[in-house]
Amino acid sequence: MTEVRASVDVAASVEEVFAAFTDWAAQGEWMVGTTVDVTKGDGRSVGSELSAFTGAHLGFRVGFLDTMTITLWQEPYRVDVLHTGRVVRGTGVMEVVELADGRSRFLWSEDLDLPLGALGRLGWPVVRPAFVAGVNHSLKKLARFIEETRGEKA
Image (cartoon, rainbow, N blue to C red; front, side, top):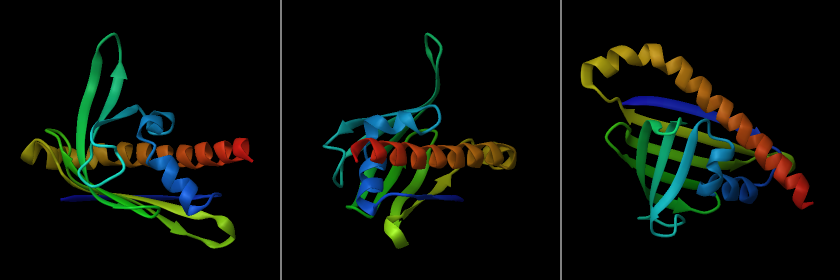
């Protein structure tokens, strides 16, 4: 298993952050190169299934599909998923922690089984910095997205 952890502080309530990151259809607004669809269930309960495509659309799709099953739904604090795809396997946790002054911290973590066996383990040190940079960029974009949307609702 390979662990990846990232977090971002957001000037919004726990409820607002939870609502934003679980709006699966809107994830493309902040997650780099990713679109997410609910493929089974309501997307807001244990057993619901999600399909996330990460890559580019160049007249055809270049990238990979990450299928997931929601294994824990604790609104407004935490969602756990089981990655069930061919490329991405393992577990993911998305959670929100309340901070002072109406702020929140969004924590994103993955425990992944690397694909391609020994080749994947050898390549991970090369891929990891770009992967982590992409996640951190996405979380900062999520915070801006929430804060800007919050301003529009006020």
